[in-house]
Amino acid sequence: MKKILQELIDGNISLDKAEKMLKTMQIAELEDFAKLDAARDLRTGFPEAIFAEGKNDQELVEIIKNCADRGRVLVTRLEGNRYLKIKENLKFLHKEGFKVEYNNKARILLIKDSEIERQGKIGIITAGTSDNPVAEEARIVAEEAGCDVLTSYDVGVAGIHRLFSQIRRMLEEDVKVIIVVAGMEGALPSVVAGLVDVPVIGVPTSVGYGVGTGGFTALNAMLQSCSPGIAVVNIDNGFGAAVFAATIIKQNKN
Image (cartoon, rainbow, N blue to C red):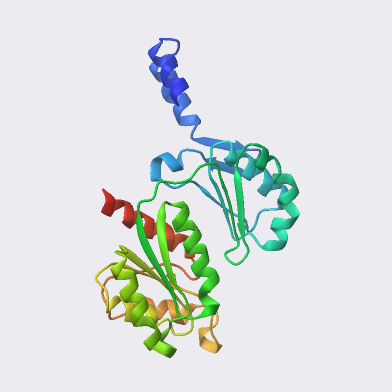
């Protein structure tokens, strides 16, 4: 972008030519299988994330390589066995100074060349241990967005006495938003929202028996909550919850 603007200032290109070059640089096309949004980080404050499911290994490696040329890379829903298969093809990242981290529980591959400026605090609570993978996805994404994260796992309504001290700790630490991850009947976000004065983001998970299988019971319960101040994201969408929480943090900072 700086090079194009300098060319315009020096009179080497016309205004129309500069406009066309700036528009086309925002999209990077990889053959016929991907069009990368190269300007998303500048436009929204968060880079384009690569959703691993539905892409073959060769396509995934090519997309990662191209994104790495622009800085941070975040790959979601990348199973451990797939990461091991493509790991050898990503060795060049270490030589170029990138830090490569893979979290097996969250199924996230993180590639970065610098640390992000810290902006504020987010709390993440889970109802049960089975909800932790979704919470870990949210944690890693939130941290990569520049947020400090306080976590408290396995404090659901089946043993609600475990919850209160954890909420108090988060409020004392001045968290600006709390992500609550729950499956089964999805009651925990309603309880939390009834106790705090900060926004609550409910994340239903696909954990449950019978009618709870697939997460739709938890989703409907969160949408039907009688406690105000809850936003609800899609089933198992820790990524979306974290990006929304980080957006709230940035608004508070501004």
